[in-house]
Length: 92
View 1 (cartoon, one colour):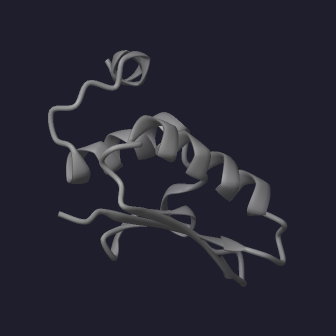
View 2 (view 1 turned 180 degrees about the vertical axis):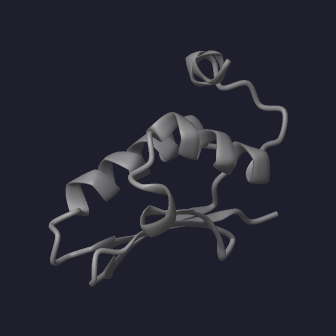
């Protein structure tokens, strides 16, 4: 099964470094589960994370995500049951 993550970020706001850092965190955590991770330039303050075209995080509704929160949301969709180590413990 293919699992694609897309991080759409605002170029006007200069959020590429934030998007790239989050991408690195996800690729490191899900190196065997993800088949693709893309960065999509956008405008208008957008910062949206999608898994297989499903929005799992939208900055306009939820603020900027902590990597651990995004990792849990991605995990639930691409590798349910995968332990996330310290990321899981932080949620408790």
